[in-house]
Picture 1 (cartoon, rainbow, N blue to C red):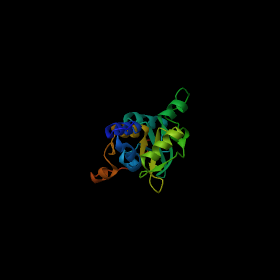
Picture 2 (cartoon, helix red, strand yellow):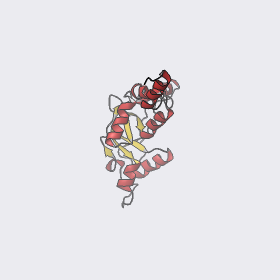
Picture 3 (tube, rainbow, N blue to C red):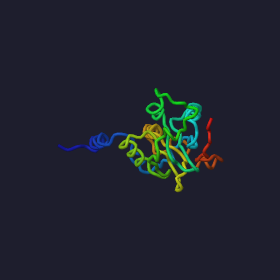
Picture 4 (cartoon, one colour):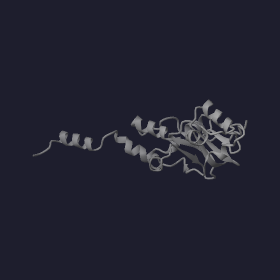
Length: 181
């Protein structure tokens, strides 16, 4: 029995579902290309109340915690749920450093999407801070950012790239704001 070329091509397409560029995008698109906004960066001595208020105000699921400009932790919605909610904690007097996840896994912004996706799935992370060579936070990539890229089915960045942000006069990284209240 011989297969005609059209039938053979259909069988190959079934073996490789999804857009042809998807595999390429996972390897060639960097995390810098999927960043949607500057991170919320707070000092380690910031109060829990001020950090949670900033997360709500800025609609962020994470706050990157720094000391001396260098990343020392990450505070997430999950930390609020598992470490703060339901406990008798004075939010105005308690420091975020007490409840953050210390020394989080980080990646450089030029890492491939495939590497970050693997790391997030294997280790169960929803967010990974992106840092420069001096361990200063420049961004945070979320599983949602990566899902949007994958759902778009294109090897294009999901939003403006870091280069475009910089060319427009913006700054990808963010200076920490001491929001102790």
